[in-house]
Length: 245
Ligand SMILES: Nc1ncnc2c1ncn2[C@@H]1O[C@H](COP(=O)(O)OP(=O)(O)OP(=O)(O)O)[C@@H](O)[C@H]1O
Ligand SMILES: [Mg+2]
Image (cartoon, rainbow, N blue to C red; front, side, top):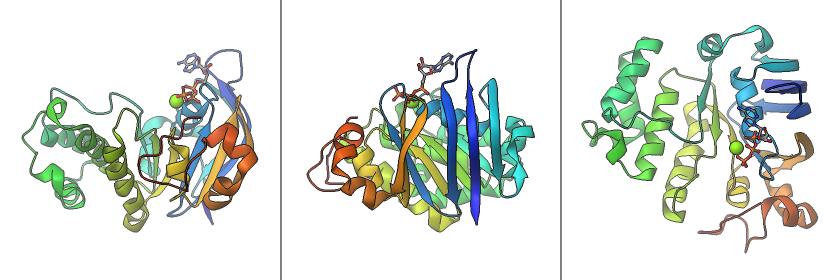
């Protein structure tokens, strides 16, 4: 059964539709990647799922709940979490403080300990200001903040943005662990070739519309679309591949 089901979703920030007629599903413990050209509306679609878009029509259902009626805080309560593309941690707070400020919202003190077990690198850095973490550690902290509410679906907007190839591999390794922890992933990625190699399925977005959807493997094998939308690679997910789209 699908965890998230989106049907005929259209909307934008003003009068103009940025996303149009979007149909999309994410099953439990699935990793789904959204790829597409710059400005295609990928971040807008993620924001719509979190309830951050001012104008929206269509259907969004999460685990049997009508999401269209829910405010952001209620979406978090039912099990959706969001990691924005940039500025996703408080630089002037320590690692521990970054988690403590979310604990006030989620009300689960034991969750911080669980996060340090899930991300051991952060445990040793608990007193470090987030602005002094490496890019990879900072992204782990952003994930940990989003996981504090024990979500069943995490929305990731370009988790590899501004990271070196080595740190990208590290962050993608963390993403791949999320389904084992019971969390489904809906992720936007510029490094689409690398992301699709470990995604169950993918959607390709162009000018606010889905132009193709298939398994990650089939999208990678689709030469015609691959050239246009996911970049040419030297084998799926080869280390250091910068799939620009
Ligand atoms: N807050 C906003 N207010 C008005 N228009 C916006 C806003 N955010 C994005 N847009 C517009 O919506 C369109 C899609 O932007 P969006 O950020 O969703 O694209 P994207 O696919 O995530 O692009 P990128 O690959 O560059 O991250 C763009 O034309 C952009 O200018
Ligand atoms: Mg974006």
